[in-house]
Amino acid sequence: MLFLLCLLVFWTLAGCSKKETTSEEQPAAAPAAQPAATPIDPNTVASVSGTVKLDGAAPKMAKIDMSQDPACKGSNAAETVVADGGDLSNVFVYVKEGLGDRTFDVPKDAVTIDQQGCKYHPHVLGVMVGQNIDIKNDDPTTHNIHPTPAANREWNESQPPQAAPIEKSFAREEVMLPVKCNQHPWMRMYINVSRSPFYAVTGADGKFEIKGLPPGDYTLAFVQEKLGEQDQKVTLAAKDSKTVDMTFKQQ
Image 1 (cartoon, rainbow, N blue to C red):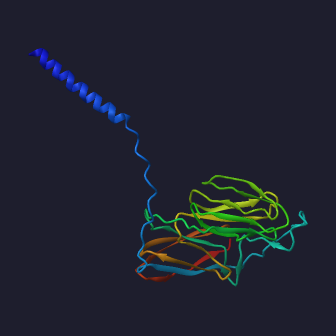
Image 2: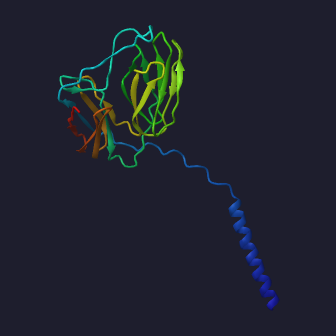
Image 3: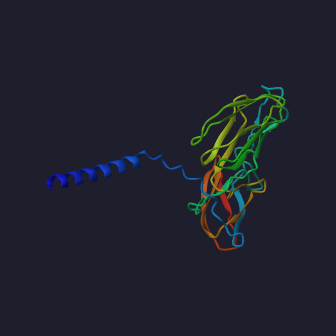
């Protein structure tokens, strides 16, 4: 009887051991698919707009000597702080907080950076994470595009005249990512990589507009390359249209 009992225990343990081994040998589960974009009810979306001002006299835009390359034609003025009548351009405005864990589709259309007159156009750019950027060279000289990011991969590529556009994208969020040209050291611009489509860059009139926001409480960030960042909270109800102005002081 004792022998039969021991045999039964042995068979039970062996069965458990075999079951555990089989479980461990099963292939790992496939990685989860990328989550779909969080739906936003188009009947409730709101917008926020405003004007960014400079308090104080705008600095005189320094002229840059481009004589080192005869192919660089025309005058070139530094764009560090550009204001006309107090209206401040090239300010990146984006929703910094309030979107939670929402996800968004990456736009299929690429944005464009053009090199013309040995100058980047635009000077400040907004793009979503993973969105394609087409970099063109419309100058009769070779450029060397060199982003120096803090959170993304650094790269450095030459682009001769009339070459095909260089296609790039950035994998991580980053604000005011600097880009320079190693061939022409005065050429500088900034790329802002956002996880959402809710951003804008102020134009020559200092104005911006962000559309399509779901109702909620948000923090807007206003970022200027020299004057820094200022934040402003705003609450948007369904179908709301709010005005949020901002003023930077000349340093």
